[in-house]
Length: 122
Image (tube, rainbow, N blue to C red; front, side):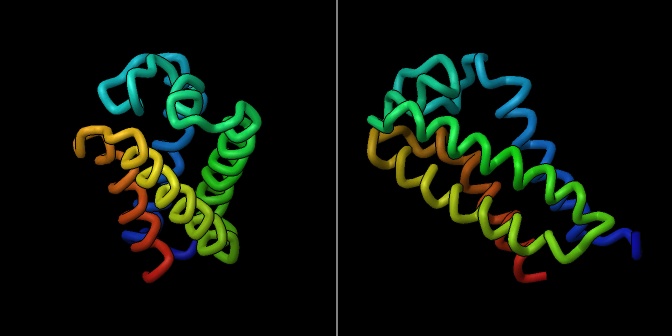
């Protein structure tokens, strides 16, 4: 590990945020769920996406989170992982717009996009 940096802090925040959403709170209702859904899987249904999309996106996000954490020791994986997260967050924002969610429901995706963008640029 080289040294403590803002990039590392952002990596850990994004990674733990993704792992929290996908592994800890996936079945929990939150005020940020898309449409009228009560679970993460329900959001994908509310967006009109096929069930397979839930598993593909989940696999990508969990993998990217693990790579962001590994990036503390292996910095070469950070930008690709952050790029995947950024791209997925653009998709998340588009889905919130598709179902005409209130702006507040898009805040977590927007924050993840901004943090991922900062990781890529720093």
